[in-house]
Image 1: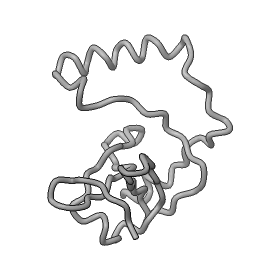
Image 2: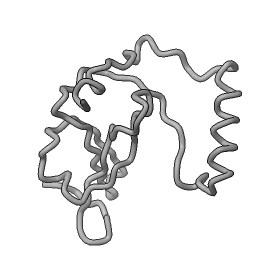
Image 3: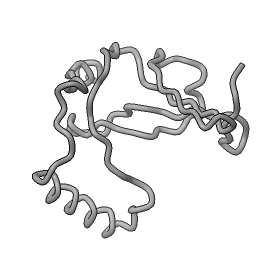
Length: 117
């Protein structure tokens, strides 16, 4: 079922409307829900979009190099070993159920990020 859900394409970044006045009531409502659940410091909002297709057997993985202050996000196979112990950082909600969209890989025991290579 997840493959069918994820096959729903997102809007290409070139066709996305930037945040505008009509979005403000939505943002206000999200703010109040997060405040009600004491989750303002836990969750935020991201603009759903895509720059390229991601296959049904792939997920985005986020890698951070603290030394150069660089983040890289790239698609990897859902069975990629770096996903073991990773922390999910974004989810699609347009499916009716939270589907992970991006995961941050873990380096070391304290989730510290280091240069790779």
